[in-house]
Each structure stands twice: as C-alpha cells, then as structure tokens.
Image (cartoon, rainbow over all chains, first blue to last red):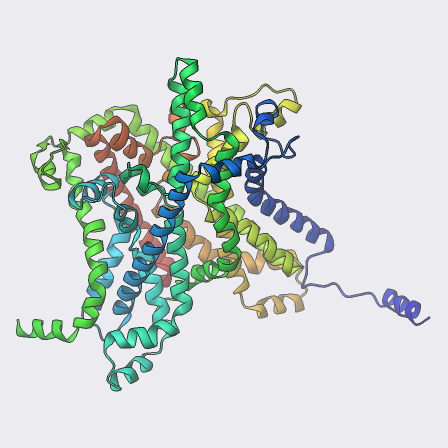
Length: 313
Length: 309
C-alpha cells in the first residue's frame, strides 16, 4: 500500500529537470563513445596476447584470429627454454632503468633544488642555463658524434643511461614543486639550527617533496624502460641490447631475410633460427606486462605530474 | 675578484648541487651546438677522435645545403613533417577536448575512471610495441584488417608497400596513442572550473548543453590555446618512433613516411651522407628554434604564467 502511494506521489509531482546531469539518453551515448575508445586503446594488447597463445601451425592457415581454433603455450615454453637472449635483454633493461632512474632523479632533484633557493646567488644563471636547452637542439648528428666519438660510449651501457639522464623540463617542474610545497621559513629554521645545505635537502626537502619526486621518478623510469632509440644509435654488441631494441632487431632481421634471399632453402633455414610469429608476440607481451601491471597504480602520479608544472612562482 | 671567490665559497654547497647537471647540459646540449659546424663540412671520420674529425674535414660552405635543397627530399620531408604535425595538432585538440567533456559529464564516476585507465594505456607503450600492434592488424597474409576486408570480398592489401593509405594510418595511430593522455589534461582543467559558475547557470535555467558551450569550452580556451601554441613551436620536430617503427622502415613508403628526423637518421646510419643530413638537422634546429621563440612569445601574451620563459 505504502509503496503504491509513494509511486503515485512521484508521478504527480513532476520531478524538476536535473540540470546537474545530462539526460539518460545522452549519458548512454557518452558512455558508448568513451567506452568504445577505451576498449580500442586496450584491444591491440589483448589481441597480441591472443596471438601469442595461438598454436603456430594454425596461424599459417587462418591468420591472426580473435578466437583461434587451437590454443597453445608453446611460444612461452620456447622463450623460457631458449630464452637466453630475452633474459639478457630483460637484465639490461632492468639494470639501465634502475641505474638511470637513480642517477637522473638525483641530478634533477639537486639541480632543481639549487635553482629554487632564493638565496642562491647564481640562481638566475643556472635557471637560464637549463631553460635554454629546451629551446634549441644541436640535432642527432652532433649528439651522436659527441656520445660515440668524444665520450667514447659506443657499445657501453652508459650510452643507454647518460643521454636520458637530465631533462630541463623536469627540472622546471620540480623547481616549481619545491617552491610551492616547501615553505622558505622551514629552510631558514634549518639554517638557524646549523644544518648544512645537503642536510637541509635530505632531511627537510626530500621528505616534503616525495610526491613530486615520485612523479619525476616515474616519468624517468618509463623513459628508460621504453627507450630503444639510444640502443639503435650506439649499441651493436648483442650482449648489451635492451628489451625494446631486441624486439626491433628481431623485426628487422625477419624483413632482411624475406627481402634479400633469392635462395629459398637458405631463407627457410634462416627463418627457422628466428623466433616464430607466436614467440615474437609472446616477447611483446612479456615486454609490456610489467607496464600493464604497474601503470594503474602510478597513473595518479602522471596526472599529478601534468598539473604539477601548472602553478608557477 | 676577491668578492667573486667569496661568493663562490658562500654558495659552494648549492653550486656543488648544480654541478652534475651543468656538466650534463654542457656535453649533451651545448657542445652539440658546436658540432653543427659539420653541416658546412665534407665530413671525414678520423680515428683520432671527435675534434680531429671535425677539424680535418674540409670546409665546403653552403654546398651541403645547396645539395639538400636541390633534391626532392628537402621538400618531401618538410612537407611531411609540417602536414602530419598540423593534422596531429588540430585533430588531437578537437578529439581530446571532446573526450574530456564526455568524461566529465558521465553520470557514473567509477566508469569514467575505468575508461580513463584504458585510454591512458597507449601512452605508456613504446613505439616498438605499437609497431607490433599495428602489424597484427596490417600484416598482408595474417592481419586482422585483411581478414575483415576478406569477408566483404576485398582482396588482401599489401599495406606495407602501398603509400596511399599511410597518411591515414599514421594519423590514426598517433591519435590513438596520444588522445587518452591529452584528454586527461583537459579533464583535469574541467574539474578545476569553479562549480559556482554552473550553479549560477542552473539557477538561470541553462541546459547542460548551454553550460558546456557557454562555460566549459570558454573556460578551457586558455589551456587549449597554450597547448596548441606549444605544439606549434615543436611543429618542425617529428616523432621519430612513429615514422620509423610503425611503417617498419619500409622503403616504398618513404614518400609519405619520411620526415626530417628519419631523413637525418638514415643519412647518419645507412646512406652515409653525413654532410647533407647534418645540413637537414641544422635546418630543423634553426627553424625549430625560431618557431619555439615565436610561439613562446605568443603564449606569453596570452598567459604569462604558461610561457616556458
């Protein structure tokens, strides 16, 4: 009884139109647009996972299918059994990412802190020194000559680390972050208590600016993990090839064989020594998996990073 | 002089902090500027190292530039770089703002967050990985796209050797990778709009559409302007990965996939025309520099706080 009366009442007093929200119809359309685009962004990865789980023998006849007629874990078994190269590439990438992120975070954090200090006499000079580097670019060839010839870093792990170590843009973001999140008075009180600049930095500044440092650290981690360009320029030694670059090399050697072999037998033999389609896709999956698992957790910091530089002093 | 040393001494801790970064900037940003001089030389590699290579190469003046601009390549790479970037800027702006508005209006916040997480994914992947993704669609004999076309009786297309499709493919792939990220930037801006503006509009009886048109979009205009101008400043620089990895360095596609960056790379690593590609690199640096300065000047006039310097 109670219920029917209530519904009647609701019918009688016409609900005022809700200006806060879009109508249900539009809400549905908006959901569809956003949902389809989001799906399109994730779909290729899912598709590659499916290909990597397909049985190699059915690939030739039916191509890459969403639902293959035969599933198989063979590709992954192949990789883990003959996976020396992949394991090594993983190792190089992890090493470069760890060392690189640590170095770049320290360099950027210290530089940004110094130029954020109002009492630093050469603050203006070093700010401009950094900002100028965002405006011009010597270009690929002079940079290559300096890294390869002058610094002699060709086929050295440092060629993968140093070129990405510093970034004027991150310096500026972090400088802004320090000056908005660390009150000057705190630094002054540290000085009065007799703490040196480094002590102030590590004991006061670092704990207070952890979110900013985390953001820059993640940008940097991602940069190292995804880097293939420096390996393309500077690394020939197969033992120093990082993950992304290894995927690229498999790719181009496949094409090389396909395009340059007149003798079918040789090309067949050469092709067989390379990982099959499914195994290559499995490597793509294994190279992407760490990011896929980690990124929902650090997504927040990236969004934060976008707005971090927004407030200028 | 004594004062100078006194100041150095007084600031020594902070100077020590900027030291590693300063050394880095010197080697990786400033010294390459001096290296651009090879654009005016007939470059010969010398075993005695960097300085010997530069000094012993013969000075040829503007010859490298004359050669470069007498080829069709100069026009092709300039056109490709500019037109692709223009398409990326315009379409990227339109789609990411639309998407940001859509995300901000969704009734269910949870779903909105879920969509955002999905859209953000491509931004985190390298171009190598994206290249593989694209291959799974465009492979001639196994790709998904040719299978789908097959259902409609269309013959398989050799995607990697037919240039006519690539402008569309590259634009779609680039938008796919970047829109999610940039729409989240705009979404953050929308969420930062003062709610009382909408309250006032509602009291005056403005519909949701009117609110979007009269409040959301005008409030976004400054950030849209700034993001666009900053992108225009970089219009002479192409995303190397997109143009190198996604078309799989396929030679038949160069007419529509060769941009300044890939041209310079090929000159350095494959064709060995170092002088000419250094000339192309310097051409890019100088025009790029001018554009950054101009766009930053304009940004400064629009909103002083958003300018780079």
